[in-house]
Structures are given as C-alpha cells and as structure tokens.
Amino acid sequence: MISMPPSERDLHAYVDHQLSDTDRRLVETFLTSNPEISAQVRAWQLDAQQLRAALGGALQQPANPDLDPAVVRQRLKRQSRRHLASAAVLLIAVSVGGLSGWQAREMTLAPPQLPMTDALQAYRLIAQQGILPADYKVGEDGDIQGWLDRYFTQANRLPDLSDAGFKPASGRLLSTEQGPAAMVVYENQGGQKVSFYVRPPGPKNFLLPRGSRSDGGLQAEYWSGSGYNYAMVSPTDTPAAQILKQTTQF
Image 1 (cartoon, rainbow, N blue to C red):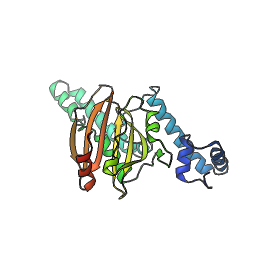
Image 2 (image 1 turned 45 degrees about the vertical axis):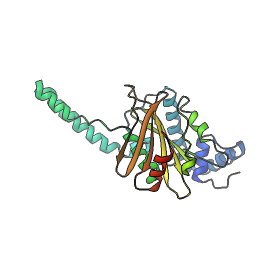
Image 3 (image 1 turned 90 degrees about the vertical axis):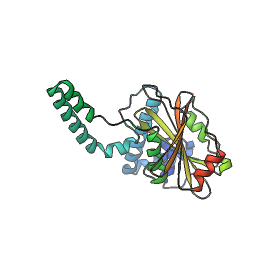
Image 4 (image 1 turned 45 degrees about the horizontal axis):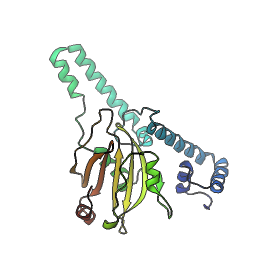
C-alpha cells in the first residue's frame, strides 16, 4: 500500500493505471482535497491519452522532432517567431519568382538531421538532465517489456545488457515528427546509464542501415527491424561505452 500523501512516483503510477484498487481510491480521495495537484494529474492524464491515441493511429501528431508536449508548450513562443520569419521569407520568394525565389525558399528549410538525432536528444533530456520524468519505473515485480509491448507490439525485444552490468530502470513515452516513440533507460550499480530507443520510420518509411555515430559526448548505435527504427545511446567518455561495444551485438 502506498503512503500518504502520495509521492510523484505514486501519482504517475495512478495515471498509468498501475495502482491496486485500494491505492487508487486513496489517491482519488487525496486529489479531491488537493485541487492544485489534481489539476496537474489531469494534465498528465490528458498527455497520456493523446500519446495512446497516437499509437493507435487515432490522432495525427503535429511536427515535433524530439520533445514531450509539456516541453513543446514551453517553447511555443520561440517557435511562433521562427515560423513567422520563415513565412515572411517565403512570401518574398513567391513575389520575386523564378530561380531567385526558389533559392530564397531553400534558405528557409532546415538541413536534414543525422540518423536518430531524436534518440540522442531524448537521452540528454531524460537520462542526463532529468528534465522529463519517467512514465514507468521498474519495481520488484515490474515488467518493463510488458509496458513497452502495450505501445509497440511488433517491435524487437529489449536488449539483454546484464552481461555488461546494466538492467532496465525506467521508461518514457515521447512524441516525435515521425510518430510516437519510447525510451527505456538502463542503469548499472555505478549509476551509469544507457538507453534503448524505438520509434516508427515516419510517413516516408525511412528505414536505417546499421550504423554508429558520436555527437556531443554520446555514442549512438542504430538500426531498423520489424518496421521500426532503433538506437542504443551511451556516453562515449565512460567505461560503460566500451563494455557495451565489446559484449553487446545490436
């Protein structure tokens, strides 16, 4: 049974329908007398419903390269200014016409991203900085594979990193421009973290060849299979990266 008042972990478990009937009633009684916390929980529930709807194909998410909806809201003003600037340049391009117009249009388009940039950014936000809380945390009898299967039924199994000393610790659902994604964070006894990332290939079905790249102190091993794109991300400046490279076949 949970303790009262409920912790943030207990509230996330309530949103994700992981509490027993008794604990759920305790949380609901607590929320009735705490309107501010109740409003926050309702916002979490709405985000979870939108993600589940997207995973079921019932909701088309707006373009969103790598961030959680809460973070998107924080950056809305900055995005609006950028969009207005791009629209102004495009309007000039249309007015001028011809080749010069197309050149102006090309300058407003973002360069193509390198493979699985969103997986690296998600690692920084969740595993390194802790900006986004986990949707699922592994308990004594937790089944994180079952949690992942609820959203990605045909995806590859979670890698077994026990030989390298890593075990699954938590999971997080994300929204990307290619579609809903999930990241599972592994930890070892020393507190070092690596992540397993999965998402669809997007509307253009952009599947990846097996590859590897470094970016800002992180190493990403990426590949495709069973209709999804995957990445394992780890810091490049720790023994964990070398251990994984030697003992794990992605």
